[in-house]
Image (tube, helix red, strand yellow):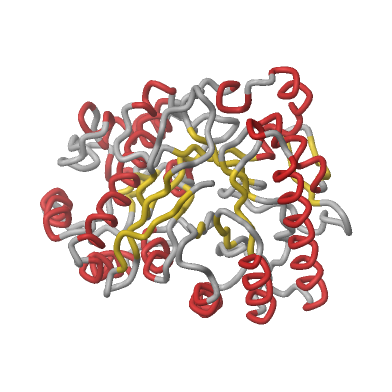
Amino acid sequence: MMKFSVSKLSPEGGRLGVLSDIHQSSEQRHVEVFTPACLMYTRGGSVPHLTLDMVRCLPHQSGIVELTVSSFIEYRETMEGFKDGLAKFVGIPNALTYLAVQDSCKSAAAGYNDKSTVSVWAPSGRFRLNSASFMSFQRAAKSNITEALCDGDTREGCSKKRIQKAVNKTLQFLDEILEENLNAETCQQTEIFGVIEGGDLLSERLRSTKETAKRAVAGFVLDSFGESFMKEETRWKLLEPIIKELPEDKPRMLPQIGEPLDVLLAIENGFDLFSAFYPYQITGKGCALVFSWSDENKKTLNDQTSKSDEIKEGFYIDLNNKRFAEDFSPVLSDCECYCCQHHTKAYINHLLVTKELMAGVLLMSHNIHHYLSYFEAIRQAIKSDTFALMKKHIEEQHMRTDR
């Protein structure tokens, strides 16, 4: 079974850990995942905008790729006939995979889960899943880690009765999935992450947490916790009491949190794993990440912006803006990504204005590079006890970010 060991608990908040002994096939390379970490976000098995060769050049990758049921459920029969699993099907046979129920980057349609099934939305429409059909798909997918089927349709304003039903159904799914996984052949087994539901009700979140922690799960997922589900102040009030009920020796994932400050607040409260969907969101706006996380990093950005009367930037700059039409500097002068080494803000502005697909390619190559580097910096900050200083830098930029 997968092991998780905590190597350091920082007095400033956060913890360093290592995921090891993840159940894997003979083709997959041995990987140790150093946390806090973000899983590589994909759509249809590919990192949006980027070719596989470009992805291989990215630094500080966790080694785990996030795949979603909604991207592949309509090809279930194809996967069963293929027999070699999703990783090989999408051309990454050596990668470890995490199978998520829903896409971290978008909210599933509300009101479509019924008494015994959860709905996922594929390009061709709606698919209803129960624990049996879900595990049937997982056996075809052969994912290394699987998020248990869950009912996360509990947006702010849901009735207490609806939230209780969602928690009960999620726990029932978990029991059935754990039993099915235990009875599966060794080559078909997967590491199961239990999902914590409960909407914005602390009593139900705690009930879900305590009951899930009693099960033989490999880790925990805090679901329905993004900004589309509840207000910011509600999220952080719920987090601390939930964490107190979770064991220290298992990883905790928060898939719908991606903004730099939110990530730090979650890590400060003891979370270990995240989804790298945020760079994709920012790329879709025509923006480039420029936030800093240290004095040296901050100085580089200030040097670039001090030549004009522009206001100080927040987490990102909007390269659609005509003020960049004659800016022949890179997005960040000290960034080693392909975009910053070869192109300028003016060129990206031109690509966006003319609606060229290359704009997304260059922006995504920069944004994911910057985001992965940020997680590496977080790990180093926890290691060197400078996490509080990093948080101060990020909070200053958070105040200047137009969200």
